[in-house]
Image 1 (cartoon, rainbow, N blue to C red):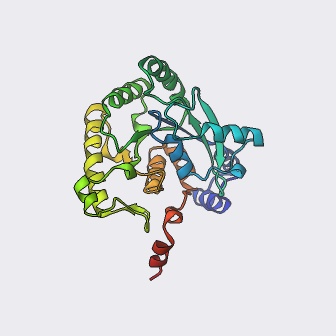
Image 2 (image 1 turned 90 degrees about the vertical axis):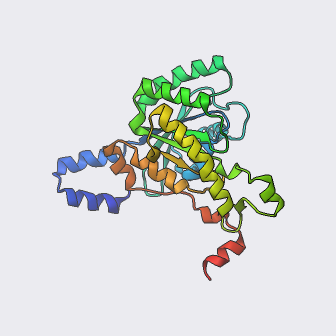
Image 3 (image 1 turned 135 degrees about the vertical axis):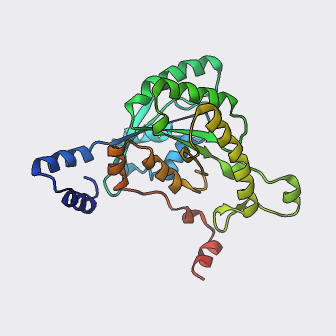
Length: 275
């Protein structure tokens, strides 16, 4: 059951009949369905694990099924770990159920890509929203633009799409800055330094402009983050909520939970927070 206090407050405000209340409560038990797509190795499943605390007690599955889910969610492979679609339901501490669907990564070969794109086009319409993860540290997005435009043209999911530019922590400072001792990532506060943030914005602005022009997206649909560092992933979740269909958005907004990025701060950085 979802967050009882919030639901009771909402029901009271709506002044529904008993029958309407029961229907709404049953609807709240239906999982929000989200599907993620991206090239192999961009970290779409790592992003999933970063935003939502995927733990055994939260997954609606037995122990063997949970082990298979963890195996499928392995990241860092140069080849696509997932060759088919699989779904699992995560239940938040407040009780919100979210069904995630993962599928084969794109970009391995032209032959496989054509096959996988057809599979994605069939699978996406079964979900409430789509998130597309890109490697924000790479400028090579020509083929991604084409794939994205094709998928969105075929599914009509432009209004229910969030594009995530992940891995921005892997953008390197210019060599002259590194030689001067400048650092890109502030490990004390687990966030990019001013120099890296300036570079991140410059690099991602170029990607965003290309996606807006070629794929017909809006800048508001695109968010930058580092799943590995848990940086900006709260904003990613907010964007996902924003681009859900209205009825589903209301249900999902009642429960919001992300992993705490301060957990990755150094002890020195944490102490500075309280000075």
